[in-house]
Image (cartoon, rainbow, N blue to C red; front, side, top):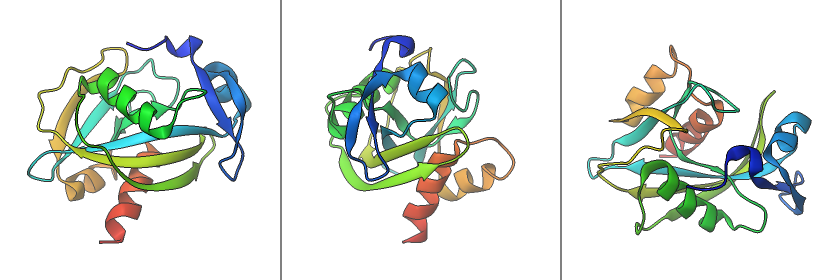
Length: 168
């Protein structure tokens, strides 16, 4: 397990994704600062995506479905280090190849983030981090996108899926 979310020092960046410093997570959220995050799309051998239900105690998008494992990049940490750490903490997965796909900026009323999107293949089983994830299941990408029309999904994750699969 990593540091409690309240104690995390998050990598703060500007609109061009240049590092400007590090601040506690609660200050990043309260001030609406741009930060970095890693997103890991976990597919099984059948190309189904692992989707997870976020706990209701999360500081952003509580109780939403999420298409990616991952989270904030800590100060002094690379995107790759963050992705490996988050995958291990959230799903209990280590030793898998993480393929970087692209970097992208996302902004809404609650979140301003530069993300690096990775994908990996793992069929489970997973050890879900109880502070972060209530449940998870594999779904096809079309099933995820259809479900997102009537259930709350993290908007940054859905935006990533749309970008990735609109290009196919």
